[in-house]
Image 1 (cartoon, rainbow, N blue to C red):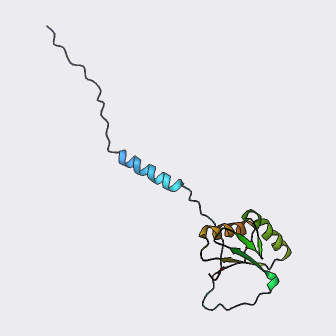
Image 2: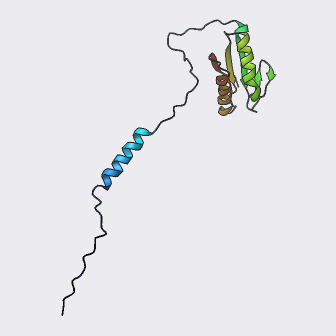
Image 3: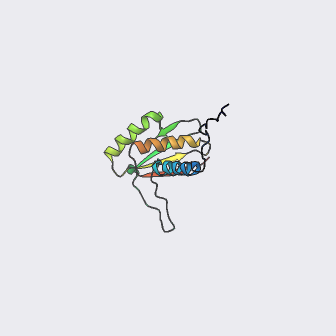
Length: 135
C-alpha cells in the first residue's frame, strides 16, 4: 500500500508587524492634509494704558441700545434686528467717520449683543464702541 501524503495547505495567517506602521502613516497623512477653518472676528481696538478720552462730534455717533426684552433701539426708534444692517450701511454711506456705540442693558442677553455685532460686521462697520447702560 501506498502511503498517502497530506497535501500542504497555504496558511491563512498574516503578519501584523507592519500594521502599526500603516496606521501611523495614515494618521500622519490625515493630520497633514486636514484644513483648519479660522473664523474671522470683528477687529476691536482695545484702549491701552496711554489711551485718553477723545471728543467726537455728535453727528458722528450712532447709538444702538439692546434691552432685556430683546428690543433693539437706534436713536430712540425701535428697529428690528433684520433692518439694522441696512440702516447702518445707509448711515455709513452718508458719514464715513461714523462710530457705532452699542449700549447693552446689564440684564439683556449676551446673544443679543453678539447678534448686533454680527449685523455691524456684515454692514462693514469698523468703528464700534461697547458700553453698558446703567441699570
